[in-house]
Image 1 (cartoon, one colour):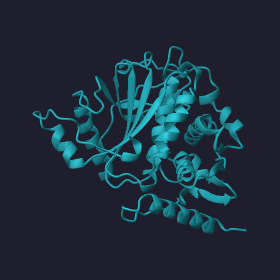
Image 2: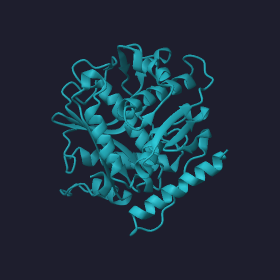
Image 3: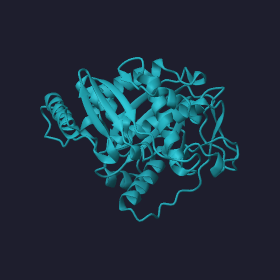
Image 4: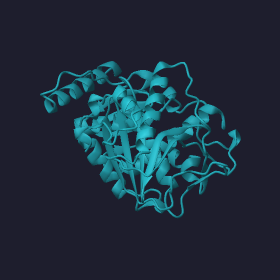
Length: 350
């Protein structure tokens, strides 16, 4: 029987070979599969089996051991294999924090199955995901997040907050390539059972869980996942997908997710939304994301699967752009700047 370490190494070698074949003109990049949180990989015939460990089901969705969507897409896109996803159920009590993490995991699993379950993806325990509250409940509520505290001790967190504020300034100027008229920061994605959110009614973790940047122009909504520095985790794609799923559940004339009571109503119009732009803003792109198959698969899947029914006519289009941190800060502080946003398109995502 193939050992887990041998199976993982075999897949890593295949990924490296596929990357080298496609990008012959680029320097060698570091490519690996995660071992964090007990995530395991096994290749059987034309199918790669991914097992998310117990810690991965209740972990931060953008960390390597929890980002099952990004790894499944990467392995399918690069190796053209079918994917089967299993997981180890965490030991939690209802309504405790880890239970809410697990509910979010099950919601993500169901939505990922909605996209690719009739194609190359198998999730044997999908019925468990179907039964989670975020999927089965008829009506839930998104909270309005509080003010963000940017004074944390993490240098990377401070850098990301600075980039976020700089982009907020620039996006408010209605600059190409996004040309947004309304822009907001820290848009909420906490989901609750009651219109007046409390910790007891929380389905997902985080009363202050929020999207970095969001904007709208006419009938289109743009959601941004922003990363700074050498954060090369593929998990940023999993987080962006989660944001898109929540937004789609809030779109349309009869959405499943409504906005909770608040003195600060949402600035973005979801009722008239006819399309969503899902955008990665990164200083550096992960090598496994340098493949046009991601955009092709995701754009097509969201065009043909309009879950929920209320937002069936809301397609999603994915993009990725790179930027230089110092340049973004300098331009945002220059009132005389009238040019486009200083961004470079990631070729494979245009």
